[in-house]
Amino acid sequence: MKFFVDTADVDDIRELNSLGLVDGVTTNPSLILKSGRDIIEVTKEICDIVEGPVSAEVAATEYDEMMKEAAVLAKIADNICIKLPLTLDGLKACKSLTDMGHKTNVTLCFSANQALLAAKAGATYISPFIGRLDDSGIDGMELIQEIRTIYDNYNFDTQILAASIRTVNHVKIAALIGADVGTMPPSTLKALVKHPLTDKGLEAFLADWAKTGQNIAG
Image (cartoon, rainbow, N blue to C red):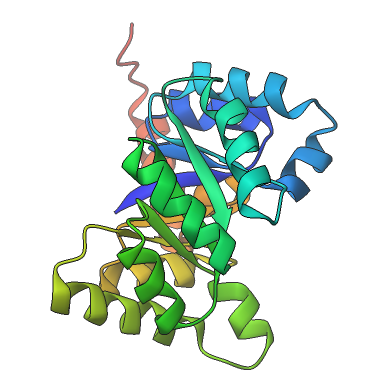
C-alpha cells in the first residue's frame, strides 16, 4: 500500500519524506487555504520535495474552465496529478486529460457506481471518502470493498486511493481490503508507528541496558 500525505504544509511533507514514508501528496482547496500560500508556489515546492505524484485540484466546475485550469496546473511539474470532481464535467475532463497523457485523480467519490464511471473515464486514481461516509452513518470501508471487487472483476487500471482517512484503523482495514493507496494527514501517518507495548518494551530494554554500563558508540 502506498502512502500519500494529505496536506499542503511543506514542513510536514519534508519531514515525512525524509523518513521514506511518502509516496505522493494530495492537496485540495481547503488545504491550500490552510497553508495561506499561493497555490502555484506551494504546489511547486511540494513537487520539488517528493518524487511521487502530487494531486493539485481544479476549482472550476465546467469542462472548458477545468481544462484551462488543468493546463496551468500541469505546467507546475512533471509529477503533477490533476484532481477533478466526480461530476459529468469532471469525468469528461478526466477522459480528455488521460488521453493527453496526464495523471488524474477523481475525488469526492461516495458510491461504487461513481467509482465505476471514473474507471471507465480512465482515471489514474479514484478517491472514495471513508471518513465522510462514516460521519453520515454509512460504513466507508464497505465502499472500498465494493470498488475493489468491481475493479478486479473488470481488470481496471484505476488505483483506489482511500481518502478522508481519520484513524489508524481506517488505514489497516483499507490495506486488508486491498486499497492501492491511502492518503492521510501527517498526524495519522505518524500515529501508525505507535503501540503501548512497543513503548513499554523499549523502556524495559533501555533500563536493562543502562545497568550494563556499556556504550556501543564508545
